[in-house]
Image 1 (cartoon, protein in one colour):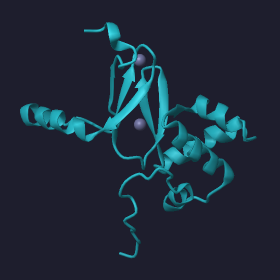
Image 2 (cartoon, protein in one colour; image 1 turned 180 degrees about the vertical axis):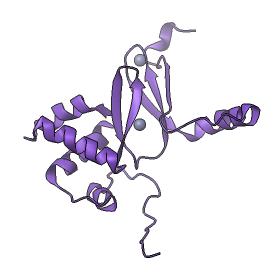
Image 3 (spheres, helix red, strand yellow; image 1 turned 90 degrees about the vertical axis):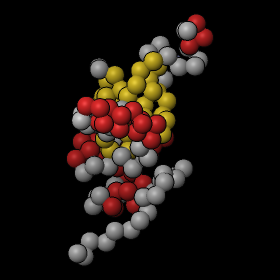
Length: 151
Ligand SMILES: [Zn+2]
Ligand SMILES: [Zn+2]
């Protein structure tokens, strides 16, 4: 096996190496790709439209944003997350596994460590043999800003 594997994917640093991310996926670091990835990292989660709006401020065509996003998804650099039934958001795959908590009142998305899910999913697996797909975990509810009247 000649494929080199460097153990750089330990924990997501504050400023991930966007160029390295593209290179690892076998992509050239073009300006649209760099802009799109950096913007998505800044926003954490964004739909194609939100990204297109943010990126076109930088003088990149909307069609380029969509095409680039599709390409990045195909090679696994970004992934879709169904944060709501009518909304397909993306996040950068290299970010540490996280569970999405979406507030149904203010629509804010909070991220928590996906390890919190493990207790639940292994209990489900033990009891039923059902294997929960935790690739895009989203829980909905009411956040602490909106929840003062809940309980
Ligand atoms: Zn996410
Ligand atoms: Zn809220």
